[in-house]
Image (cartoon, rainbow, N blue to C red):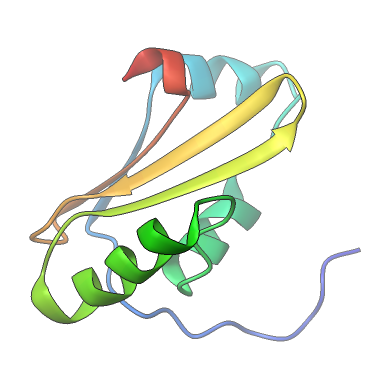
Length: 97
């Protein structure tokens, strides 16, 4: 069961999109991206190296693009990208980039 505590977003996501690959996983009931989107919006960048983590932290202040990577299972990795102007956030599979 997910925690009842609320997470305050660090930034506005703009329009939120999912790619065809993520949409197919949602439609067949094998994946629910909402918890990962919440993590991304709260500044939990997931499974990225420390240098990329610091780059994202800097991007919050300097309006650069944000990237989160989540290794959901050994076979499933989710990327979430928010554009520099915070107009669009896209959830995608790495092979769709």
